[in-house]
Image (tube, rainbow over all chains, first blue to last red; front, side, top):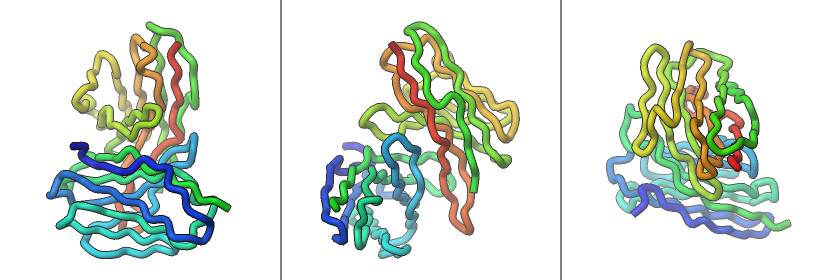
Length: 112
Length: 116
């Protein structure tokens, strides 16, 4: 079992719809969770971080964490073509450690 | 936040040669990280570079193949030695910083390496 798993996609959604991206992780003791966006040919940029169970909202983005089920998701409301990118889920397994485990990413395509 | 630059941005190299990638940060940072992202794959941590000490390598990566220098708190180099086509990848420099109260990992623009 991979440490951090994501569906590679592509996930296609129409413009204005909600895009839902999911990520599961294997280490039950994981503490910190991140969503990065990576445009083709560019480096990853952090868009959301979440540390406790529940929802965290930032503009059109909502991160959801369920530690009991070991999954974290990212919702993008009112999806725009500019949201088309690969979204990487990253997990920091232990508080105070530097190691991030990245998933392989989900490619999102927002259709105009 | 941290602004990271990398040189070269891309290169095409012959098998058996070596390439040194430079990473420059606009602020002093304790830890710098080197990642590899192979086509269609996720980011894999190669090593962590601390100033004044030897780099710490992850499983599957060795110093002879990926020697790292960290002469000061704003600069690091990664050398890919005795290259083979399997080394074709994007190499990313990364640092840990803060944005407000949030700790976050910043990434450089990457070096796209093709080995023929």
